[in-house]
Length: 106
Image (cartoon, rainbow, N blue to C red; front, side, top):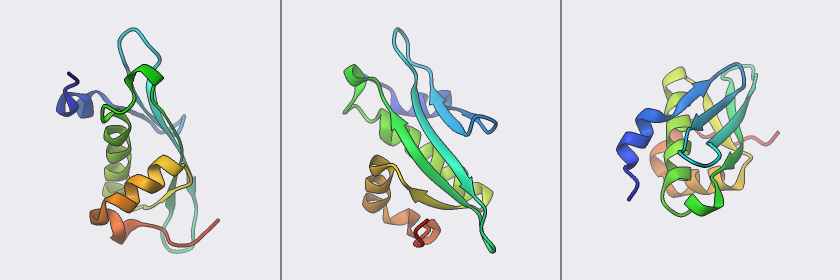
């Protein structure tokens, strides 16, 4: 059983590489990549790609890393966008992030 609360503490943010990673034992890291879109009023954190190793999918890892990224964006005052379909679906399912969603298209 995966401990999602502990997992949130293990997620690492690398602003230089523009990604969040979660080290996973014995397999590739889970990751969430993004880019910053500079806008006139508020910059946008556009989440472009998520990856969870196939053998660990459907256990909440993807949602945990996306939640971490979105919470970081909110803390920093960014709007958020999910170019990645998984992130877009997450945002659709979580109305608590509606106020920070970027409605404009690229």
